[in-house]
Image (cartoon, rainbow, N blue to C red; front, side, top):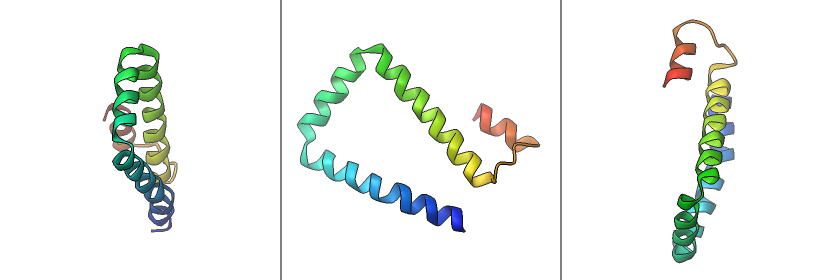
Length: 77
């Protein structure tokens, strides 16, 4: 339960800030996304960072145990 609360405290305000920014500056975000789709390195970097974040969250939620079938699910899924 502690990990869930920690993640909620960490990610909750971040999501709120990003969503408020998107609502207030919609045109700016549309421009940033359109420019980002044309640069291949940005797509690669965002995918890499997403994978890193996912691995960090899965490690945090499983307590660092990478054994058994769940390990395979983390890498494949």
